Length: 203
Image (cartoon, rainbow, N blue to C red; front, top):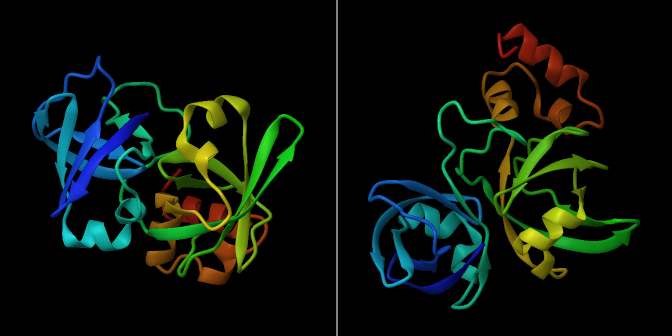
């Protein structure tokens, strides 16, 4: 994790971990948003944000001192955990509720326009890869285990907080190709999606 140092005029400054040695042009996910590292200013890494990125993400809603989830790009050949996350944000959704359940915290979010989700599918929230359940046309839920809770900014969310959301890239391509109608992707259970992915050569 890191801290937002400043944000204005299309430029974001972020205090990154001291051990990081970034190179100009390198991609870094900042709260799930894929940004290009420009240069350093002290301990801060500088990133330029396009108007599209500023308008589509929740970074514009944060201020200096905000905790940010940071992740460097995956190296080719490295072990892949979670699911494919590109850093290309689909939009912003709000937290509806947070409930402690046994050893986890269950978070309920609104389902944004054009949501592409299936029961037990994947979603990235502020860059955190999570499994969704209780998917409805209006909302979905996800459970956050203690390790994830302690090591991400999700623990700072309150009802009404906005987060960046990235839907599963495989589901988006399947829907864009007309393989699966939107209502099937939103249904509880994913047989239609799995069938479409197999038919179109995803696996």
